Each structure stands twice: as C-alpha cells, then as structure tokens.
Length: 403
Image 1 (cartoon, rainbow, N blue to C red):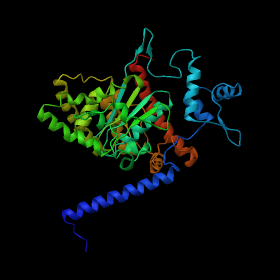
Image 2 (image 1 turned 30 degrees about the horizontal axis):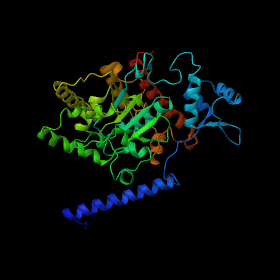
Image 3 (image 1 turned 45 degrees about the vertical axis):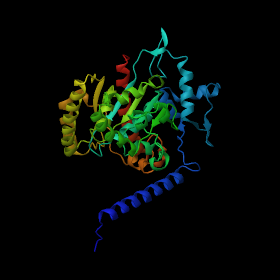
Image 4 (image 1 turned 90 degrees about the vertical axis):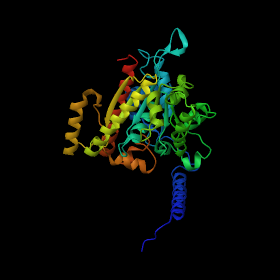
C-alpha cells in the first residue's frame, strides 16, 4: 500500500528530495567540468572561425602565415583551431582595415561628436511565453551566445526563477547563489544594490550573465506590499532603471522572462525594445498563446495608462521545435504565417536531438563539438539556429538604421 503523507511528512520529503537532487547536480557539474567545476568554451575549426568572421578560410590562413593576429592552436594534423578569444581579437584586427565601420564589430556606434554617447540605442530583447516547453530558454541561450560570438557585447539576464538559462552557463543556483546575486538584488524596494554587483563574466568573450534563482519570486511578493504602502512608485520601470546603470557597456540585452505574466514580466516588457514570442506549432500551444497575448495586451494597457511608453522597435514570433515532416504542424505554421505575416520569423527553430542531447550536459549546441553527433544531425540543427539568430541580428541592424 502506498504511504499517505500528512502535511509535515510531505514537506520533509519534498525538502529531502530537493537536497538530494541539488547534490547530484553539483556532483555532475564537477565531473563534467573538472577540476574547478567551471565551464570553458570549446575551440573552433578554421572553417567555423572564418564563417563567424564572414571571411574566407584562405584569408585566415594568410593572416596566420603573415604573423598577423593571434596564433591559432595547431593540431597534430596541422589543422588550425581558434579560441573564442582569438576570434574576438581577429575581429578587432580586421575592423581596423574594414571597408566600412561595423563589418567585423557590428555593435552600437559611438557618436563622433560626443565620444561618451552612442548614435544607436541599447537593444533589450524580451523572450517570453507562459506555456512550458515553448523553447523560451533554449531560444534565449542560443541567441545570446550567437550574438556574442558575432561580435556584439551581450548581457543575458535570467529572470525565470527556474534558472535554466543560469544552469546552461555553468552556474548552479543552489550552490553558487546562496547569498543572492540575481537581478532581484538590483530591483528590490529596500536598499537595491548596483546592477554591476550581480553581473558575472562568462567563458564566452562579449557575453555577461545575471543569473537567476527562486529569490526572484520575492519581487512578485514584495510588489503588492509596496503598492499597498505607496512605496512601489512606477514599479514596472525597475528593470529599465537598473539597466541604465550599465547601458554604455552593452549592445544587446537578452532577457529570459518568467513563464507567467507577473510583475517581473511586466517590468521586463517595460524595459524591452524588442519582444520575441516563442511558439511551438501545436494546437494546444497556439490556444494557450491566444490567452497569453490577450492578457499581455491588457497588462500593457494598464502600464501605458500609468504614463509608460510601451512602444517597441519590433515584435516577432519564432517557431520552435518545428518538425517539417509533421503535417498538422505545417498547417498551423501556414495558419500563423497567413494571420501574422512578417511578424513570424522566416526561419524556424527545428526540433533536433542534437539540441536536447547538448542540454543533457548543460551545454548549448554552440558549445559542443560537431564530432559528438552525426554530421547531418549537427549541421541541420546548427544551420537552423544560425538562421533564426542571424535574422534577429538583422532586425537589430535595421533598428539602428543599417542595411
């Protein structure tokens, strides 16, 4: 007979199971990333480096032979491998002789008349949906990493208390964030900390992280109390105001929003210049998204009535976990494209075992070696991810008035 737990027993069991799982995850991390349990980025073949820089491999070889730029690692087969740091150094070298500014460093431009300012405004991208399994965190992580590898200065913010984006970047909330260290520290109502104090460098050049954990839920609990006491002010501006402290240090901020329309999401929406809504093309998900959009519009009306400017540079839907051979999915995709037109990204993110298998070791597809999968599986998945992320990069460039 199954044991029936009373409330106290159930609390004890849940807490014990939580501690067991956290301990096993910590052990797994140490086994995956010894000896100091910190992740590092893999190296890139000369072909991959050339593709990221958008030059020919032969040109990279010539730079190496001429002694220009960083020296790549040479394998026993005399093949060149470049670190992510090497690729960034090459970007800076090539930008000096580029035909036009931004060919290799595509980020914001400094105002020539006032070198302390930028001619382009910071892009803040909120990735959202309140339906689980829509690929929100997968989309956020791959977008942030692709933009960073492409030369943008990126800040990734995990605003989801479940902290999956945080775990993907080698931070385990239960062990690494016991004394805070999330965005909550910078947006809390009593004695907020400088946002710089919760920003962490990652193992990828140009990519910084503000991790998340369950502490973020405190903002959901604090805000009603602050509103009742008249101390909340324009609470939905708190994320935006915190970002102004480090606005000059980044080109793009990617926010992985919570899977709910609470105060955190409202504050993220107020900070966002672009909104990316993930859609899994299944009927139940589309029905859920209908409610999500209706509730979001109602909330944005409330915020706008309080005096906030809720206009955004762009909003796009991205199809996730898409299976081209699935006829029902194709019908839904056709329906969405007919209804929303250009608001649906041209490139879908395909469902792939390569992406899910990479996640088993807390990695994105950009972090794993191609040799870990069959060539066709890897190439199909990486081409899909690159197409989605580069289309979003194109939106950023258009927003800044560049072709």
